[in-house]
Image 1 (cartoon, rainbow, N blue to C red):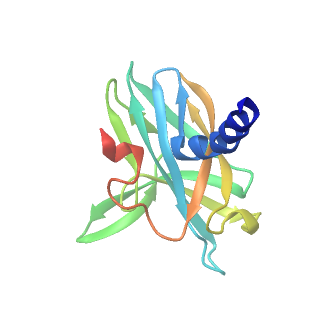
Image 2 (tube, one colour):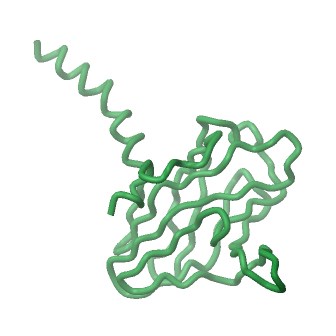
Length: 158
């Protein structure tokens, strides 16, 4: 009986980690990193996540990923009656606050894509977030066919 219980626990453990899809670095919690499945000839892809900060202010300085030649921090801004995307040098993470990287908001643009095999539904790829105080935080980005539904990500359960 004990062996069956241990086997069941071993089989369920990966499923629990797959659901937990969040990463902690000091007072920062990075929740549900995700990206859309890459269209066949797309030159770039965006990655999204939520940063919850339970401590002092910090700043996201840069990002990188082995699947891309370069990675940039971007935001969408409303200018001259149009929404446009622009690169930003860093992103402030306020003390006790939250920053959402989401479509039509802050996001990470991955350019000069190297490994397209990791950019299909169900795959994961590494993204390293470089913070001023928390340092380098590696996360696994889940590739999805559709954006998460409201209430699906840990960020919506607060």
